Image (cartoon, rainbow, N blue to C red; front, side, top):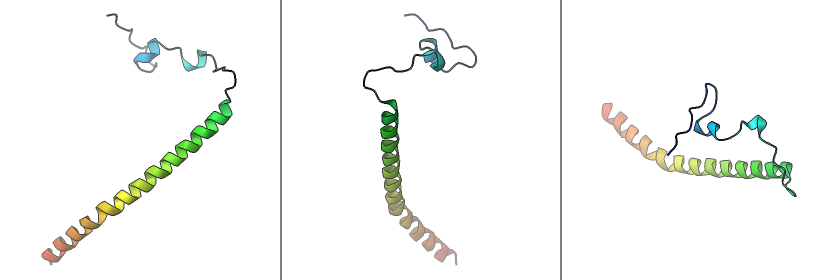
Length: 80
């Protein structure tokens, strides 16, 4: 089982020994592939996913916060 050479200073991770640097890789040239459309679609899906995660986090925050305030109020009342 051969070991991969360690990356030189400034190179990225183990895979840099196997892959060509980004600047020397050929651009993706596939018939019928529209890079601009792909990127627009990817960004739209990413935005949708981020909105969904934010909504889910807000819902979760609403569920987890009230009990903390109830406990805090009881503690403050006991201290008074």
